[in-house]
Image (cartoon, rainbow over all chains, first blue to last red; front, side, top):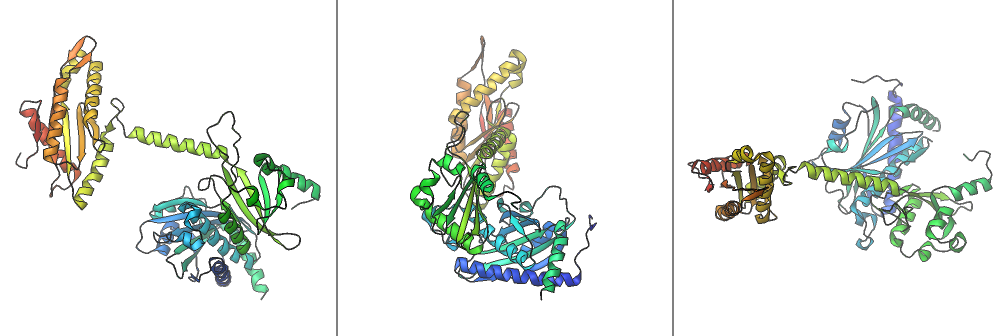
Length: 208
Length: 316
């Protein structure tokens, strides 16, 4: 099963604080996105869970659910005190109206792919920075890259020889009012981040 | 972060690092322009610092750049561009004047928002030369495309192989089964081919296959698929073709093959072919069944004396 946890997992209380920190962080992300995009941003309550390498793909599949069988995905790595990888998953409708959303007009000739990368970078950056700031941890981002256009979810999340046993999964669903735009953000934090996460959560709690 | 290095050392490093670095204000006024930028753009630091970036570089995507800078300042978050979507930000010459293969430098860029010493909102743009990466990526893509094309082909004749033909037939079959339309499949087998090999040798046999392929290829339409199905057997997918059209087509092929013997050395080798045709109609369940019908028709053509075309009939 590969469920050998070398690091003490978060306890119940720590998990509760984590959920709270993520709620606040995402709320702030939503607010700054609303300011940038000049539209109201609806964010689902973030779902936090632990997944192991065996059920990772099926778990994400359940989270995005819906009837769509083809998705487009962008991957972005983050590193420093917290580390992991985040995916933005767009259904067939999600990609439409992207250029309108970002305020680009057609004369600017933005390729659809570049828009996907751009929007993903903004969404993931806003959400994870929101979380990292709450717990006083440093975070840096690598450039986002496309993992696939119009593919089944399994192909998007395909990975080779995963080296981890379990990781923290944060999922949040974005929806913008006045447009059909929506997307799922799936952020996965590796085991190596758990100690940093715990120390951050403790100092967050103490500051209240 | 900076350790014991003083400002002049840091300034030197920023200037000489092998990465383009520029800093702009929210109005795109240039604050910093390092040597990489100077050397590649031929615009000197003295002449651009304090001036608007777009005035010096009218070819830059101005509106896009303004929005990018605004969004990173607002969200206080990095932004990126990749050569795969946007080949370059600044149109610089590549550094391959001898080896060539490209027309410009490919670039990956990062936009980094920060606050200046007077609290002003600034954006640092870094620019990486990724031309070599882009070239090797394109070479791999090209090799991949070449291999894929090769895997569809029969090595001797250069026409499609059986595997590719069946995959295409499957698609055509599903299309007509779903949306309607016409579809015929023609099988062709050279008569007494074994005798050619036995009498003149295998090289002569190969020559016959190559020349017959050329003759059929001259007749097929661009929308048809000609494939070598096996040994001396060929298959031709005829989209949007009914039995009437298919028969005319099949007889043209049969006549051309009969009329033009193959020359091999001092030998003149007469060749004829038998052909079996079948057209898709409702009730045919799969492309396999369609192939099987053409095969049955071909068998009848052989049985009836060869060098002829037979069309599949349900009571065969």
